[in-house]
Image (cartoon, rainbow, N blue to C red; front, top):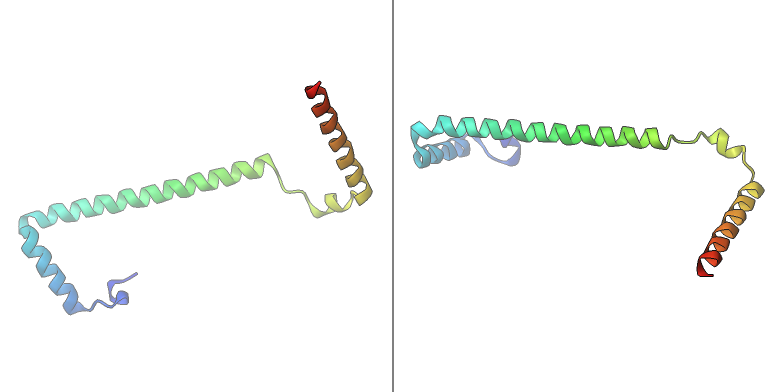
Length: 101
């Protein structure tokens, strides 16, 4: 995003530069520019590191649970799914009853 895009013209930029020059003096400006450049580089490296971590996490998630293809899901009918759900619910109830006794 350019400074001109946010409504600052050349005259405004020159006034800001003159104020900075008066505040910090000519001897400190190179130091400030160097510090600004180092900060910008560190920020960019941090962003790149965060993006790499996100890509790595997404890759790990895709390795852990690969998406099922629609053909595999359509091969199972509803009755088999309901029967499996009933069987698992009965197993959970039996385990709960055993732990209460």
